[in-house]
Amino acid sequence: MTKLSVSILSADFSRLGQQVAEAEAAGADYIHVDVMDGHFVPNLTIGPVVVAGLRPTTRLPLDVHLMIEAPERYLADFVKAGADILTVHVETCPHLYSTIQQIKGLGVKAGVSLNPGTSLSTLEEVLPLVDLVLVMSVEPGFGGQSFIPSSVDKVRRLREMLDQAGLRPELAVDGGIGPQTAPAVVKAGAEVLIAGSAVFSKKKSVAENVREIRESIAKTGAP
Ligand code: DX5
Ligand code: ZN
Image (cartoon, rainbow, N blue to C red; front, side):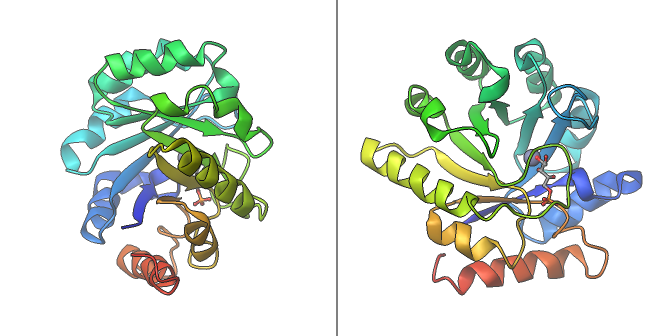
């Protein structure tokens, strides 16, 4: 079953708990929390205090995407706040092996993410260690950007790498995902779709937007 991780970046922050509840009621599988530091990416967003505020509002796993330099400084804080999955970027982790071990030692799932210009080969040594691999299909930093078409082939090549190695971390895609782009990444082998602006688009309700994404996936024949 393809999972949908709803990114709160495009939610209405004046009523964040309510928006998360709407996403949960609509059938989201994870709540995706985009943490940005103004260094690794140009934007600044939220920290552990918001994760702690969200924790009691939902039963869904909190999927925390750390777009920050030196993420090892904050891992314990995010776990204490209630994160269930911590994803770091390979570009920010010179000691990626240790960082992954640190995340696992904190008792949560470990994810690694790649920018669009970063090669899949950077993952080779750590693939057996991780629970989730996140392919960025936009440059990280902002919601509402256009999907980079070459991401489909990157997902397909990552799926091949995982199959050849007999590994089963969740394969996630983040950026520009909606009913138009979801089918291609699912066909290429993605299992977790992260979507923000397509879910919180004001034109329709969260429930309708989630339904449209799900229907677009169902048409591919994927569960
Ligand atoms: C981008 C973030 C994404 C973003 C996705 O840097 O990592 O999670 O919220 O937003 P959309 O779905 O609008 O591209
Ligand atoms: Zn994200």
